[in-house]
Image (cartoon, rainbow over all chains, first blue to last red; front, side, top):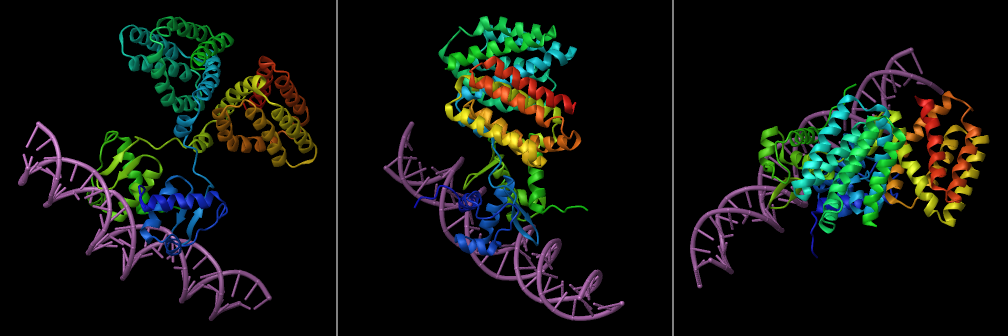
Length: 222
Length: 222
DNA sequence: GTTATCAGCTTGTCTGAGGAGTTGATTCGG
DNA sequence: CCGAATCAACTCCTCAGACAAGCTGATAAC
């Protein structure tokens, strides 16, 4: 038998499986360390580490003197992982939802600092499009989009965008490998157009232009 | 009443602080367990539990014989917690972004099963609006909205919606306490209207009606 | 120059001991 | 009979020591 995972991790997975299977109700106490150790055939410290791991994942909570309690039936969604596994089209549609709404809000909330940030990131993006390697260009592109979402002044939308970024980044780089220069330069105009609509406080136009731009990317992938 | 954190938790927080502070680069090895234990003035098993906790939070990774390595500079975003702390207006704007896009997509992707689900949840919602306590009504309302997002057939949007639900649920219940019956009955028409637009495959109308409905809720909060 | 070996590191696991906190039954006072 | 104080048994928490298992880089052998 090959053991690629340490015992403590295996024990954690076993416990998580049982918890998910409803063996213990929410808020209920698990058997004691010694009992669990005997049940799984491992030492006490191994069980303790397994419990610690699940505590880190916000599934268990241990209270000295009282016991170990279930506080969630499954691990919190690890969004990085969810996004890594999701279809890229689903991810891009999610991005489209977030960013078009952000563009709409930004049109009515953008500050002078936001507009300055647009000018900055747009210039960087243009420079990068002309003479930088793919990954730099993608970074510059994402910087502008992040500035746009920032201008919406909505913490939740910004956190969502940041969560999406890692997956989007790798996708964009992959896309550029295939389609060498079609996206690069003519895209700059689309980005400027979005920024202009936000500057002019035209919410509908900003949203429409964002949608159009992101739909174009989506079309390439599909 | 002050809650005394166990040493292992304190050690984990200290390590997380140092990692976030950039003391060790991504992928770099931490000092050995014995070294860390001496540094923090605790036993080796305490350090091990701290490392295990951070491993559960996907910040550290330990490889037998090699060492403990940094795989992220901060803990993954716990979205439940982010949403709990965020302004409710920000949360509702996020929901609006997700759901209007979902309505738009649903209009072109809805299946017969989705339409059946609409009829079901709308009926439940009507019943609950007439004669059920607040929390049941909220549950019925959310069930319809979830059916709508499900009909978009996009796993990311559905996960996002589910992430938002806990926070939205408590907010809705709070709202109903204040504003006893103004929202209840007249809202049913708005929900039916959304479902009809999706049934008729009118993407723009479905999105517009969703936006209008959710903006109304947002207006109450603001 | 390439491969084999191995000493010295690392983490993994178990055990025993004692400390600290919680809980529920028991006892005591009214 | 009821409420409060007591306390024993249970729980998790921490430490120390021992040994196993795995990795790494230096050294030796070819």
